[in-house]
Length: 511
Image (cartoon, rainbow, N blue to C red; front, top):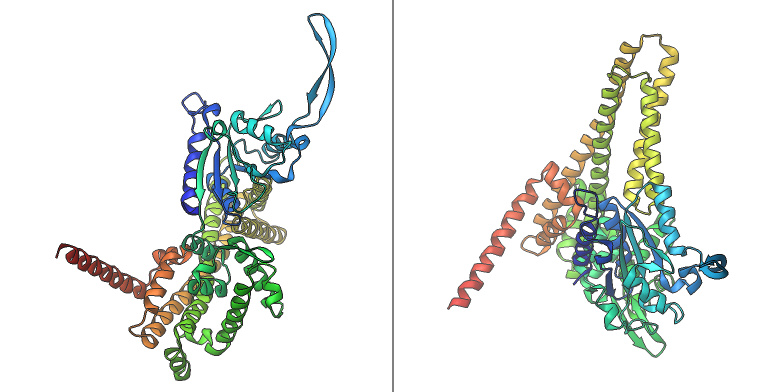
C-alpha cells in the first residue's frame, strides 16, 4: 500500500484503540491493542504520517528512533533496594523508569493531553543487547518493570532488510502480535502532500517529467546510492532559502540531498532552465492577463518539457497565493468566533472584566495552547502560524482599547459597546482586504485559464491545469468556497470526455 493508505489505517486504528465504553473503559483492552508495524523503505514519510495523525486526532506524540538507544536507556538503570521477605532482610536489584516511558509521562504532565501515540522507529535495527527487551515490549508493552500508560497507542516502523544491513528478523511469535502494514513509495500520493507543503515548483515539475526519479536506491561501485522523498522535501526548503538570499544552487548543493549522480546532474540542469523560464515568460504578466504576442508565440512553439515547466511555474505562483488566501480566510473565521465569544461573555451579568482584559485572556489562552501542543509534539507549522497571528491580533486589539480607555471617560456598559463597535470596524477592514485579495486571485485564475485556452488550444495543458487544481487541497477548497466558472466548465468537459472513453471501451469489449 502507499503511505496515504497506511495513514488512514493508522488513524482508524488509533481511534478504535482510544474508543471508550459507557463506563470510561477502553473498548479494546490495552493488552489486545496490537502495535502497528509500518514496514517500508527509508524516507517515504512514515514519521510525517504519525505527526499528521496525532494533529488530526488532537492527541500527543512521542517519537523515538530505537537505533539511538542502549539497553540501559530503554530499560532504565539498575539500583539496589533493601527488602524484607518472610522476615529475612535482603538486597534486590531494581530499575529506574525507562527513558522512553518517562518521556510519555513528561508529555502528559507538560501538555495536559492524556492520550497519544508512542512511535518507535527502526525497531528491527536495535542492538543485540536491546533486542530481547524490544521483543518483550512488542508483546507486553513494557520496558523493564514499567508499562506504557493506558490511552497510548503504539505504532512502530522499520526498514526491509534490502535497505538496511542491521535489520533483525522477528520470530513468528512476535510477528503474530503485530499489525504489519507494508508501505511503498508512490509519487502521486507524495505530490498531493508536496503541494500542500509548498514544495518548490521546480521539484514537482521535474518529477512530473521523471517520475522514476522520485524514489530510487541503487548499488554502485562506491556503495549504495539513493534518492528519497525526504531528500526532495529538504532540498526544496534549501532552494527556497537560496533564492531569497540571491544565492546560486549548484550540483554540490543538490548532491548533499540527492545521492545519485545522474539525477543530481539532470535536476540541477533542469532547475537552471526552470529559473530561466521564470525570467523569460514573465509569469506575473500572464496571471495579470496582459501577456504579449511574443510570450504567447514562444509558449505555443515550446517543446513538451518546456510547456510542463511553464505550467509548473504558473501553478506554483498561483497556488501559493491561493494557500495564503485560504490561510487568511481560516484565521478571520476563527477570529470572528473568538470576538463573538468575548462579546457574549461581556454581556453576561457577572462580567467584571474590561474588553481589553477579555481579549488579553483570550490571547493568553491561545499562547497556552501553543505551548501545550508544542509539548505534545503535535503543533504543525501552519497551526502555529495561525495561533500566533490570532494571539497577536487580540493583543493589539487590547492595546488599542487600553489607549482609548485612558483618553475617554465612560460607563462600563456603553464603553463595552463602543469597544466592540471599534473591534468590529477593525475586523471589517481585514475582511474587506481578504475580499479584495480573493477577487485578485480569482481574476488571476481566470487569466491563467484564458492563457492556456488561447496559447495551448487542443493540447493537454488544460487537462493538466484542471487536474492540478483538483489535486491540490487548498485550490479545490478555494474553488468550492469562491467559485471559478472556467474550472467548472472544463471539469464538466473532462468528466464527459472520460465517460465517453469509458463507454467506447465498454462497447469495444462487447463487440
